[in-house]
Length: 344
Image 1 (cartoon, rainbow, N blue to C red):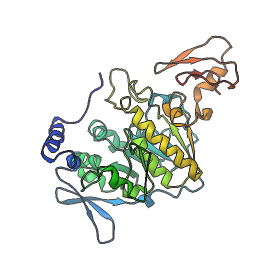
Image 2: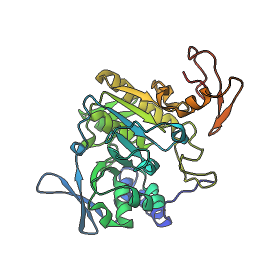
Image 3: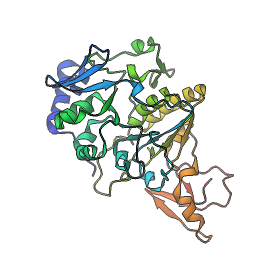
Image 4: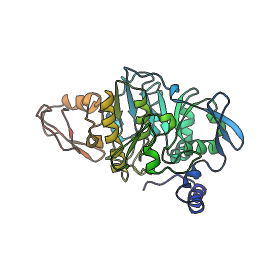
């Protein structure tokens, strides 16, 4: 059964801050104890841990200008196994969490890596240490920075850190109300205020149940021509990630957060349409279709292998999803949970 990797002491601190400080300040646990982000004379911010400077925060400008280019956001869903990422251009992909396994292999040089949940640090710090090189742009949340400092504060020194600051629960401030959010000129929300989008990630982003939500806000701020999603499956979140095996999976809250994630993506899709940014989904099992992001089959490796097989009822499985051959040539709509063996 998947388990949480948050140390017991951290769980106690999380509970204690909520009891002592209340809901409006409970997120103090993200930086307590020891982490401090302080302005520098040059106008930036320095990262201090237990009084010692261990790194520097950079702005969105640390990411390359993506105007006119296409970017990819790559997650760690099971579909990555069957996705052809060989054509990914250097510095064009944001790798989320366990997708950093791909660095130096299927994706030689990513644009950035993004980690938002501190539990990933506790479980995979050795992987981060081995895969993330000096000079790599890293999108890290406050809690991730504190967890990294607890593991090895010196590791941050030669990384280019861009802060994922939760706009609802920002570093150093109390939780913002919906009224406070709506007066911010860089914020867009849906009619109910449940889902949001930041037009200026340097001033905070809406965290929405998956680091993919935050990464998308950064990616869209670069004004690319398009953004493609690989391994953002959501629907099969209970299956092992592409680098895991059955019985050795880390806890994932994606399944429980599906509606929340899709709500943020639906709003993001509307904003992308306004800005002429094309969003494409490269996973045939992804729930992103429910957010209006259409499936694009060009990277699906399984199609070519199956086309070479003799015709007949050849079926297979991918993380509990049935694969059916289809003779319609892509003219019919299929159920969201099915994968066509011949491709659309």
